[in-house]
Length: 172
Length: 143
Image (tube, rainbow over all chains, first blue to last red):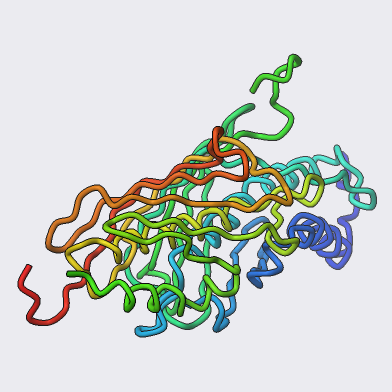
């Protein structure tokens, strides 16, 4: 009869995962500039965009700028994709959480945004789902909502080139 | 005839466009050119200093909206319905990014727009956008 090893204390696990997430998201100036933060529950991320006056695109309504919505969705998709890879490596013990490698983010190939209703002048949330993540390419879908999760104000699908996939001659 | 002075004020009053330091360089009959300087806080990849795709999207969305507003039919307002962006290459750090948008078809309620973004090497585009925009007509407008 074998015994399972004693599980790690929950605080150790949380600290390791939160450190990895901060390592990923906090190093990107544009993400900090927009004020985007990430909330983590287990491996699930929710992107969070606190409302700010300078995110307005239509002062008359007022409504969030379509470009801000696009950027928020794209940031959510890229971080989700990187996080999924980092999570796998981290949980499998293939990387040292105390000495995380520098982040190389996936490159956006194309990104298509569907504006469903105008973004209100309040906080916004987004969750991304990976449709497929291959060795070279990935497809990600992302939805953003404000007060009501069932009433998204925008959604998007994008294709990404995964890091480290350039051919030896430098061709993509 | 479109009230261009009004539309220009409308575009230059957008808080997020101000935040990104965008300038309206050209604006006439369904075409608009908007540019913004490179800035450290817009960087998406600190290792290279390349501007984040999202900032380029914001520029292209603004240029497309401006192209709609500049259309001769004089829309009272516009909002993005859908936008697709293709990224061709990273924009060169420190260089100004310019988006040229053209509104190539307008119906009573929808405008179809495309845009090209370049850095200071305008022979090699950075990104391209295609979008459809809702067109608001002034009350009682006869179009």
